[in-house]
Image 1 (cartoon, rainbow, N blue to C red):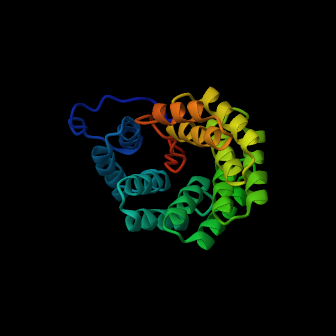
Image 2 (image 1 turned 180 degrees about the vertical axis):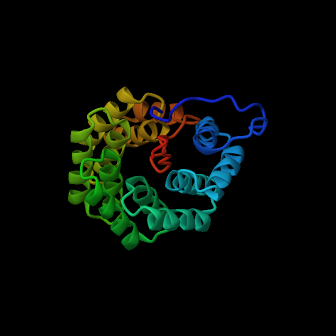
Image 3 (image 1 turned 120 degrees about the horizontal axis):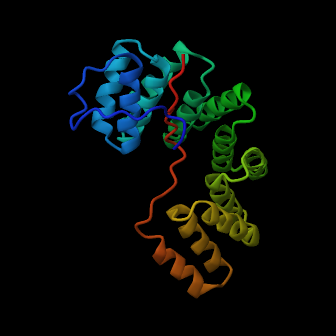
Length: 235
């Protein structure tokens, strides 16, 4: 992912250099990006204690808590981040998705709407809003929101993937196939797009092609649009 600032070498344990300020937060982001969640969590917690880039660190720590199934701690981080900075869009996007996974759909929709209110052209906010609307059964509204997301970012592979999922639920199999094939073209190796396309092809009566894609999708990485890590160090 781009936009996360200068990479730093913090040693094997991440603690050989005494880190403070921007250097500390950059090191946390680097570890987070590399998948070293334990060390990233520790560094974010130190930065939060020092009140260094507080909102960014609360947001990213919340992402780690969600990634590691500590949802109540994630919610607490997002609530604190919103209190600290009520116009930071990423927090609303992440909180909406957390609430969605918890089944708190009304509040998730409210958070998603707030994100769009703050940043109407945010492709991520529009996509996530569309996913929530889809789960509510508001398919036409969901389609409109995801299409707006793609209008703002025509190479957004995740949006094409979720548009395909929506069309599958709407039994618009030809549209689903087109969207999912475009998702795979833009972001090859996405399990969700591959497996969904397999299901679409099966629904279209293309048994061999559908089963082949379902087999290929096993063990492939899934797009995770919920981990809205904020990689920029902002003043």
